[in-house]
Image 1 (cartoon, rainbow, N blue to C red):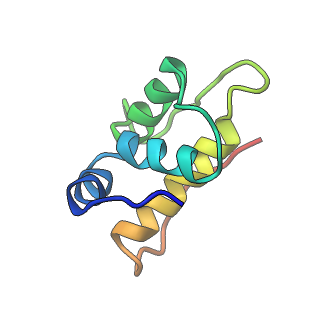
Image 2 (image 1 turned 90 degrees about the horizontal axis):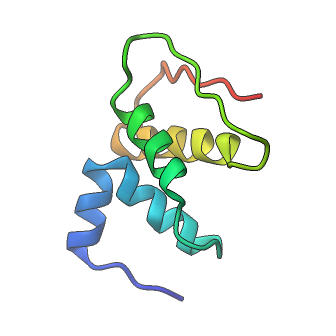
Image 3 (image 1 turned 60 degrees about the horizontal axis):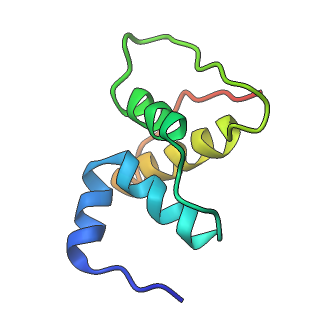
Length: 87
């Protein structure tokens, strides 16, 4: 079991990329790849209010989108308008 210190937890609360690293470690995956980190950055800092993330099969688009939804709810448990769709 990995224990995360308060500094890491605070960083993960502020930056989805840090949260993604923690999630990946907790579910036994290697560190996110550069393209996965880029997808995480784009989700946190969208280019506009509607966009599409495309990637090859197996790049973890659905896992990252799910983790992003969890991150949003962790930051604001009362949030009611999470608009993420993954195919």
